Amino acid sequence: MNHEVSPETRAKTTKCRSDFTCLTTGKRPICSAEGSLRDAGVFLKERCDEECPYVMAFGGGYMCKCPMRFELYERYHV
Image 1: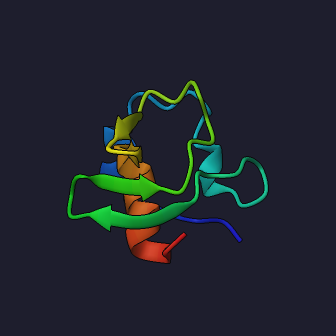
Image 2 (image 1 turned 120 degrees about the vertical axis):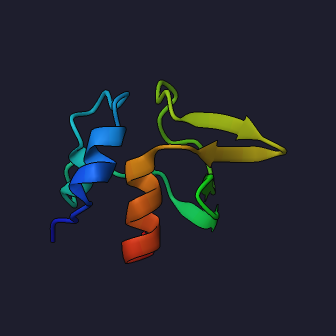
């Protein structure tokens, strides 16, 4: 199953280093989310990509500020 995001979100995701492979299930795992903060980002269970420019330390865990990751979580709960 492939995931879809809006053209606006794709255009905002300017720092992606993996050519949007998170949109194709099975190509590259996306970081596991455990919640979101309205329009701010997604709380991660763990950091799965050490070089992702969208992930930042947040309290005792990590937050992903990737617009595409946020829409995937909000739309598909993945």
